[in-house]
Every structure is written in C-alpha cells, then in structure tokens.
Length: 468
Image 1 (cartoon, helix red, strand yellow):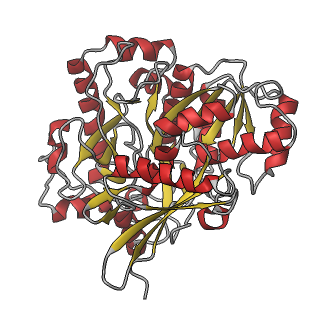
Image 2 (image 1 turned 180 degrees about the vertical axis):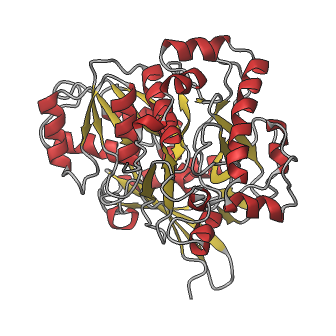
C-alpha cells in the first residue's frame, strides 16, 4: 500500500455544494434564506473551523497570548473577542517553523497521513514571498465561490474566457483557472501577464479564438484595449468582448467599459489567503459578501474595533469553509471598505460592501488627511486629457511640511496641459480635502515607476518622506 490520499477523494462534493450552493441553487439561497437561518449556517461551519484551529500551533499561540482557552469560543458571536492577525503574523510563523510555518499544522498529522495540500506563494514584490497553503476541501470551496460569482454575473456556458492573471508560484492564475474549469462550462485561455504572453500576442489570441470575456486586473486589461487599437483593431468590431470581471473601482469600471466599447464590467474582491470574498451581481450595485462562506467584519483602522455600517475600516475576514490544513479566523487584510446600508434591488439578503477602497498600510496622512493612493486614479477618471495611468509621491520639505504629488499621464500637449492640470488639482482638492500638486507627463512616462509591464498590481505610491 503506497499511502497516497488523492485530492479528488479528499472532498465530499455533495456536502460541499450543499453548504455552498452554485447556479440557480445559489440564487434561491441568497434571496430566500432568512438572516436567522444564515446565521445558524455560519455558526455550524465556524465551529468546525475553530476545532481545526485549536489543533494548530499557530492558533494555540495566538489565542493563548490573548487569554483565550478551549471552551471560550462557543459561537460566531464570540468572534470580536478573538485577536485578529495579518501577514506579519504569517511571516513570523514561517520564521518559527520553516519552510511552511506552524500555521500549516503539518505536525498534527501522523506520518504518512497528511491530506493533500496545494502550495503557492505571493509574488514577493514587497519582500519575502508569503506561503499560501490550501487543503483540497478548502481549495475547492474557494474555487466554487469564484465560479459561482462568474455565473451570477452572467457568464454563459459557451463563453471563451481570456485570463490575464499571472502564473508561476503565485496563486492567482492557477486559482482562477481551477474555478472556471471545475465550476463552469466556459472555455479558458491562460494567457497570463504581458511577461508570460506578449500583449500583441494576447490580442491575436482573443481574435483567433473568439474570446468573449476577459478576467484579471483592470490596469492591464485597459492596456490591452490600447494595444488592440495600436494593431489597427477595433475592440467592438474586431474583438467581441461582452463581459469583463476583475478588480475594479467604481470609476475604473466605467473607464474600462469605455475602453472596450461598452463591455459590461463587474468588480470582485478577494486576497490570496481567502479567495473570493465579495463580488458584484447582475445589478452591479455594490459587492455581495459571500456570507454562506465568508464572515466579514469592517473594523477601525487604528483600534481594530467594529465600525458602524457605512464607515470606512479594515476588512477582517473569517473563512467559514477552511476547516482543513490552515484555518483563516479573523485575518486582517488591511484593505479598506465600507458596508452598504441600502437594500438590494434584486432581493439578495447578503450584506454588500463598496469594494476595495485602498490599503490602510499604504495610506498616507498628509496634513491631517488620510489619502489612499489607489483611489487617486479613479478620482481623475473623466478629466479630459487624462489617460488613466498615474503614480503618487509623498514628500517632506526641510521645514517638515508634507506634500502629496500626483504624477498623471496625459494626451494633452502644449498650452493645453496647464488647463488639464488645473482641472485635476480642483477635482483632487474637492475629493481629498486638501490641495495637492499635479504633474502631467507623456504617455508611458510612469511605466518604469509603476512597473505596470511586470506587475499585476502596479505601484501607486512612492513615499520619500523618510529617506535619508
């Protein structure tokens, strides 16, 4: 007997779809389930996660330091009593028990009995790559959630999906591919980033194989529309893209749709550790939190305490389905959002959020005002002559005064640039609350700074205030 335990035999597929319905079953569940029934569902799944967490050294250490003992966590209502953790805690875990960290709990299984594990890392562009580990059940649950969301947004069985998510050791491209292949009938093209498949070649692939949907990050999808035009192709007439689903802001969605000739654009949010947390539905009016699988708290950036609905705060997530390998209980993403307070127009009972509104650990405070650099570009969307690419700088003068500079690409030339810059300054003052400097540069002039050609998530802030 060789002792292997296969991935596909490690998942109870019927139970998975009963806990997390998909397709028409999901629509019925999301519109007909009462809040009380949903809470009971969440509680049942949560307690399974707690049982697994107590078996791992990571949570024994994290909760023990906070004075939490077995038996203290009786229901999901106890969540706010538990400490949150973030990427720094995971990196510390990797140092404690290299190479996979004590959060993996590998030592809790007898020799030869560890279940199948999917291993990826983050990109490591801001330091040492973070290990990402998934059990088969947890992996397929998050695959299902994204496949479910694509279908909810209107993905058709005969669609051809062009994906610009990266591959290699990073999770994104592999996760999205699994979601589409395992939980939809669409055809999937793994084009990857511009480094993996040249942008010109990507446009050729879309045309040759009749792509109808693009998935990925907004910045690169916008660039592909530009590349198509440079190749003499019209995004509407020559490339019949009808739907785009990716990581967008509200203004990004509008500009992206225009770039692709009116394609319907959908926003969704998730991080590598958790998979899909929330996404727009067919109403495209806020992102529905996948509450049968994800429990989302929005908490004050400084104190960590829950904020009122409608207030800005960090997203802290608990994955209710990850009761294998590495549970995720109160993970602080440091991504900022706010909960919507109005009712869903399509009758979905799940709570909604505004989506990704910036990172609290990338937030800069300039003269008492909190500024999220990722939000600056969408603020300028619609200003004539602004093409969409930008980077921000925070600087400090000899007298200790902090200033914020927005460097934006423009198509304006000559004397017209002064008027565009003045309009940008006025828009930013109105939306941010203080005057900021604006520098306009030529097309592609920010590419070396944002690293848009080599990163899925471009750099949007250079903080020069603390350089020696």
